[in-house]
Image (cartoon, rainbow, N blue to C red):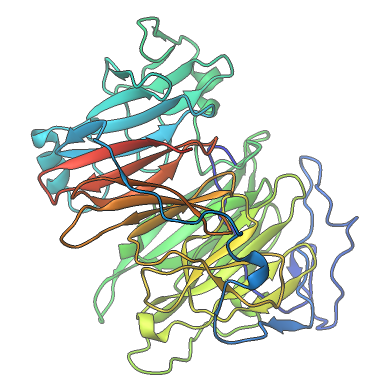
Length: 479
């Protein structure tokens, strides 16, 4: 999935839903494959109701990787770490994106004054533009973009064209088209015609609908904190009509930058609400409260110990080829009280209770084929299972002791950032799901914070830091 990755969060659900309305019969059968086929623009496919069978994994404890998926009988001696140097060092920097063909890495740096300006803004999003650079993965050439580039929390300022050129939305609203590391950038006159090329998470994947969430009221709660009363509308961009309008509540501390995601062009998931739990919104139809209506769970989480400050959240991902999706239900709050994870399969309405209580972020591989889970409050081990292996055990992926991890878009390689106290920190790459280490690199004493794979799976970029004074980006070509 290129620019917009939909993360599949999957949980088992019960209840009779038909045509996105909650049914009254508990024995409703899942919708037929014909009824679940991809609808034409302007119509909606119904949400498959959950089956009456809840699948629980055969063991409640994770197991080691089974022998069938164990390391092959080849040379598995850990490679000697290679030393690499950063492609850039700055007081503050951020990864922006990869080009679809993986030729260009785009990043942004900030000088000391810009960094100080951003740190002053403790609430909200600082739109300080900094300086955007293009790094050529073929020859390591680095070029600054000559004008300040817009910086928004969830909307892209970069859009790639099929001829290899790039659109750049600048800080003052000007849009220019050109080739990175050349002087052929020119202003685009008809901005309205190309504005939809920039990724906007509020717009549905096929560009037919836009979701808008607004604050209606802010209320200071006696227990502390501010409760937001919100209204969300879904607008049909082809007709201008409002398809849905509904109200909900959320704590202000969670912000409004990313309230949910489009699962497909006619289905929007709101990750969490204070009063209703996660919501599944089908365009032009009723809103489904997925915890009681799909998962048949209570919004009130029963905890093993107090305080019981746990809320239920959800994430989702979809397959654009089949129109199927998965929803994962998980707890957030006091870690020790997290409930077990639940997984929903839209292709047949099946639901699962999983043996673990936490997931990695994301909880699914980029291709949606694997679950990436972890033990409660454990930060250096990973447990995996094919998403479609319903009821089977989860397996421990061999490496452990890492800070950050990322699976390639191709689903074939896993990279880990490893912090070694008192010695050099490492970046190591393993085959997935076999777990054979194929390469290791030293990033000196920089602490790895995040890793981003190039779309083709041949490059990674690692963000590291030496505390507050110095940040760095490392670029690695993966064999």
